[in-house]
Image 1 (tube, rainbow, N blue to C red):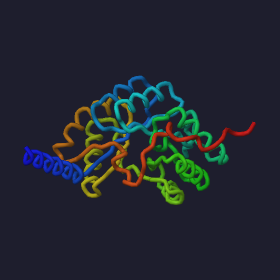
Image 2: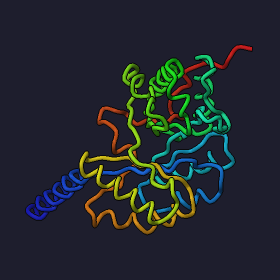
Image 3: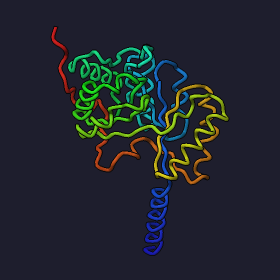
Image 4: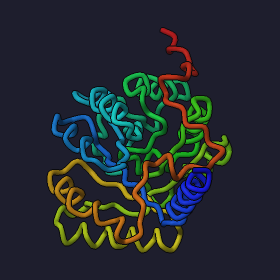
Length: 258
């Protein structure tokens, strides 16, 4: 019996090591919250990560549902774009004061308390700004949250201020579904897997389009055969990053004075 137990432990250790040696990818599904059909995407039996927009009709419900299914949940924080397009309710803009920036983040996290990190929705203008990004990272540091830069601009200041305030910062490598055809998404997935094999990890961003749902349902089961592990975003964080949902940390700023 003892020999069988030892062999079982050895096989378990070998399997764990083999899993760790596999290239790992995380796929973040942005823009969750506007449609009830988003819940169907969350029900897919894969380790996807869901970035939820605050102050949307189904945002809180979708985040809770994902949390209950033990999926990683992020706050998809609206930020000012360069093209003037409205980023949605509760957005961060470059003309805000430090108190306004941090209060806006606080309200968004109160709406999505299951978030363990944030990424930017739009933000091609906002993420280029020095002071606003410094204030953002200062606040994330206080709430023990990480940041994934969607890289909607090549001039993002996220990395600079994440380092300054000790915030864990990751970056997107691939947009999976800018073109919602199977051929285009397949090509983007191939690019993601090529990056993962080279770097050992890679991050893609996708969206809750019906075409994306069909694509993921068809292609994600094939990853294991290709020697790739699909993991939640938490699996790509440094070991020294303590994962804490926003609902378990105290608000870091007070409400603005009238």
